[in-house]
Image (cartoon, rainbow, N blue to C red; front, side, top):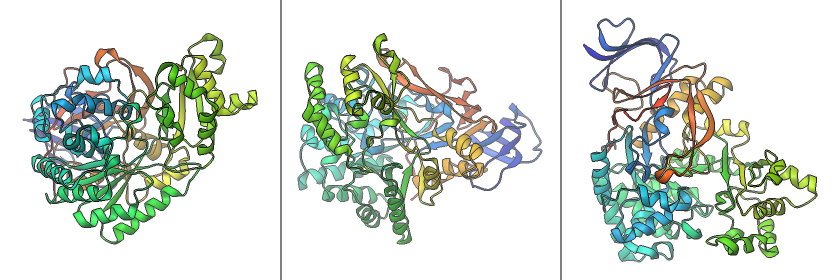
Length: 560
């Protein structure tokens, strides 16, 4: 008797071909048979009439590196149809890490991960020092999802250079030490090497993330060390000074793919992202594999001026970084500071999160009843009504409320016609959920459900079959995941059963389940009936339960 039988499911196998109504048999965690009217019995029979069955979503851009050490259920991704998550993106990892660097590493993560230092201190289980030991810990503890892990540039740099990692370029000797760590990580099972050169990526008090201090010589040396393994992917979140031509040279020298983040559309500089995608196409025509990570979600962030992530990448905001209390308020109130911010915003840039689109910045929640009249109004509208500059309106409102006013900003990807073009680009990868990071700012962990429901079903920008392929087979192929991403006999039974008529993601809401009861944003699944990892059910329509089996595998062997 087999373990599981789906009867009459509309099967999207991940190939991009049209779906077909079939039965699917699962046994011992593998897909045993796919066909019509399969005879025999199973311990569990699911009547899937009217429902669709597809491979589980592969989320190639998550940041669960810290959370997974205290939460093997890596919420909220499993309930949102994800069966495999890749951690360590942008190089924001916690391994390797020497004991004397733990506090430094956590402080580096407070800004980019959107978690308080207290959450990280209470939550992270430091049962490792090296990257192989970190993988051993993940293997011992288990996870509800399959996990693949990048070795992260910032952690490697900190391991070798300590506090200097965020202050200077590396010496030849330090680069050699880093290369040895990367090679060891690849031998132990890393999926690749991840880094960031983005100016928006800062640690505590605005200190640059360590990878931002690396010169091209160091970057090339570490990517080539990864390539020595014969497998693996380079993942990099790029700043303006990192060119596609340089990244193509890394792909050429390492003979390995380079995944480039974050390609998002800016309404104030709309052509830049398409120029980058065209440069990626040219690289592929040269047989150098480059992939652009794009998002199917509008980038919307909640923030207060106590932690204003959307504007912290501005050069003019630097005087406020690292300031607290009255000192921070004094900076924000200063005319010279405000004039500098205004001047910078007057010069549009594709590489900033915020470009001064005040009509897309809204007051969500005020701290005082006297100011509640501003809630659900945009800063642009308030500024027009008051005949004042919008920057002054936002800063003065926040200062009046001890910087506790909650704002939301629609930053990028707001032009759906442009986003549709990006999603259908032959060298784009739908990604950038950032699950596990930016927990107080936004939550796009349901990106796959949004692609299936909003873009495929509602807008018809692509077929449902193509949407499934882009969430499953395509990332599995790029990452070298073996026996996953396609429904085929002998492959792992990572499955998502859903209602095509209702699939989607619900509105964001705030929960308080981080260590110490700290808050995070989450979203609920719509139309998800069940999720299986290696043949075991981990979620149903009500979400993931604490008793769900830790059915995931730590993935450490990849196709060349």
